[in-house]
Length: 284
Ligand code: GLN
Image (cartoon, rainbow, N blue to C red; front, side, top):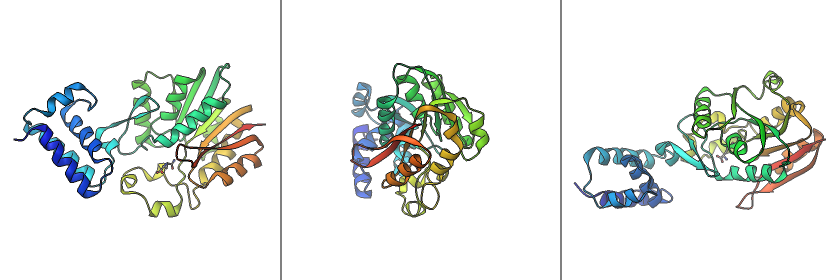
């Protein structure tokens, strides 16, 4: 049997020939998973020189095959970091993306930091937005609303894992009753499904493994913003802040919706790549 270092080298070549991005990091993460450690531990570097055991080698091979088949790295390792916290992820829940850090930064910048706030996060998925905001803001209560049972299981697990006070609420944001059951909020956030019908036909292979219900926002991608504004506007206190993540090129449409619903100081905020990634406004 070869050393782990050799298996790693072979996997990197395999990934490179299949066009897997960031081949070396993917291979290291998957080998660490098979070895039951983190590739950032010194134990991992030590292991590399050892003769591979067949169990770990077989598991590594299986993980590499799945990765080459397009399965996202995050699902294979079962967790992902977002804004310095760790979130469990797997089939049935959207993987937290770096794009969403723009929404967090925007809320932290615009929220009244001296006041105790109630936050409602819609289409919560893994819970990454609500759980991070609960850690960084002075929160009275944070509610994370999610419809899918599969995503809900991850949301609840992530609340426990991060020792968070977030309250998971099963609910449908397109149903007014979900809104009526919640208290008045100071801050309303959402990263709703916003891919268009055209986007859905052109998904990157990795994204096809993620739940369609977390991605597809109707023909023009804007269905959830319409529904959320209709159903949840009355749950936001006067002067309350709304921040929604958006897809590339949606800023004009979503800003117009907020203005039509009477929001003030409506702004779009760019992400690290210079793309408008969220829209924020204050309720009059
Ligand atoms: N940002 C995701 C993507 O590009 C979409 C997530 C969403 O619809 N909220 O795949």
